[in-house]
Length: 432
Image 1 (tube, helix red, strand yellow):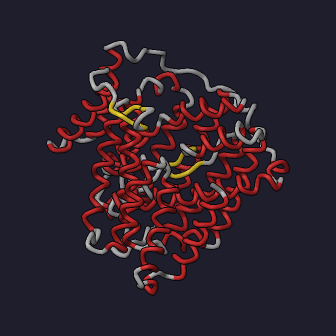
Image 2: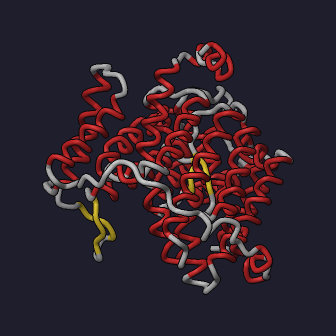
Image 3: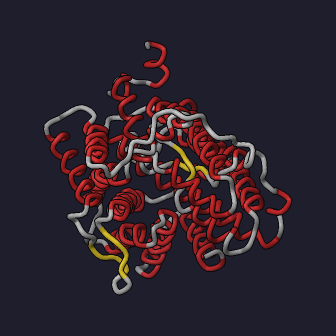
């Protein structure tokens, strides 16, 4: 235990091994849905669902181990939501490309990601983000999480007239999500250990007793990964028609992960007062390597998960949290029926609770200065409304630069921000 404590700096970050394990369990429970959602979505392209299930678990575990052991941060990784939708609905079903070619595009974008990380270009990009925007990104991710929680639990539903409207709160799912949230509030206020995880488990048990969740066994052997393993078509992905796809994958992963790293480290109290992220270069290496490995195994791009903030809220502060998540992803290979019994509404309350916590950064914004406040408002509102962390960050950057320029305060914009704004504008114009 002493070796583990020294390696991860347990004492230095005011945590314990027990707390890190509980935090890892909490993070896993809030992101375990990807084990089932990802195979369902990619199966629409013709990919073998069982093989994608295994690839999802293995790629997630590898990413978590790399992040935990190398960067020593409490950040978990898995195939990204939004990225799998782009893979399925845009590249394969929309453009008519094969899933093998789409995997090849993921592989190439991952290699570019590795190069960007190796030459510290991505680290430079993240560190170049103005402090005000970093605060806005944290709050924007919080709003995004809230939207996800409300949508997944049925508290808000689609409306042809207003896009979204309130669902029927007396239905079982919304009612349990609300119960989950208030259980967390009560447990946290009363300082009950593992409050977030306990809430998830209580709601899951209630769901089982009510017959809303059905017992489907405990252990099963994992399916074969052969149908997707090393099946990517790199040559096909080098076609000129795939250039925009490759860069779209790269840009989305770049800014999704950047926003997530900012949000998680800020929430964990690991970000320095000047906005620097500890072990950032190593975190980027872990993230980019996992993205490449995921394409070889047979899944869409792997990225850092914003749900890691749930583990942070449970006390996670070191890479041991990520290691625990990785172990649980491996165990999920054999306990798929058991893991599948946790309903979305059981984790919705936890996600919404984390969202509430992340909005605290708004107090640090100078709301009397529109050149500072307007980009924050853009990130805060458009991240959930576009359902994209990447788009929210991009629009915030552009707003920041334009606001400074038209106000005659262009000297406050660093050269890095000018370059990034130009790139983001080009991306929105030509790759959207």
